[in-house]
Amino acid sequence: MKKLFIFSAILGAALIVSLTVAVPEGQAQGIETGFLDDLTEDFRTAAAGWETDMKDAAEILLVSLGVISLVFSFGFMAVKGNLDLGEIYATFLRFVIVFGLFYWFIGNAGGKEGIANSIIKSFEKLAGGSPASPSTLVDRGFSLALSHIMIDKILIY
Image (cartoon, rainbow, N blue to C red; front, side, top):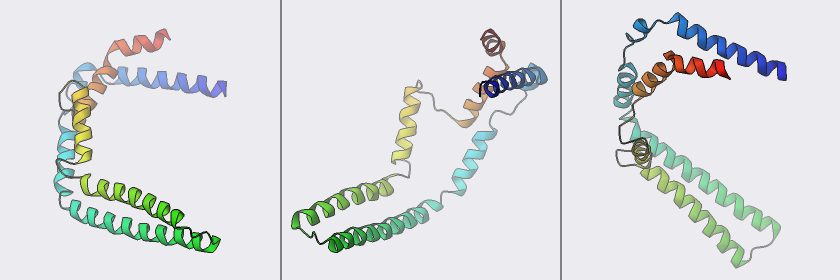
């Protein structure tokens, strides 16, 4: 196990060193910076029509699985023979709460003001307010990988 760890560490360090030596700085600056943004925008426009279809399919799937779960739960209660009114009420209340929560998630997840978009915007605010795009993240990664600070830190440890 220790030999595998040492081998992986040496292989990783060799890979990082070879990448920084193989790509000169002038060539690394010639990398197109907006490629991933363009790709993301193309996918977003292509998938714009899918939202209602996916939402409808998710609702149908949730309702189908909810009915199966409810029938299964009440079926087991009937087979066990403990059909108390309190247990029936507790099972049904738990089902309604969980089913309603997931139905609300499906209804409010997408769109410009949906849950997913608000989570992304809150992470952007935590990062300093600048909108994060895939290209900026990759550009920052390339700039870190190509700088000698990263290589110096790896060689020190």
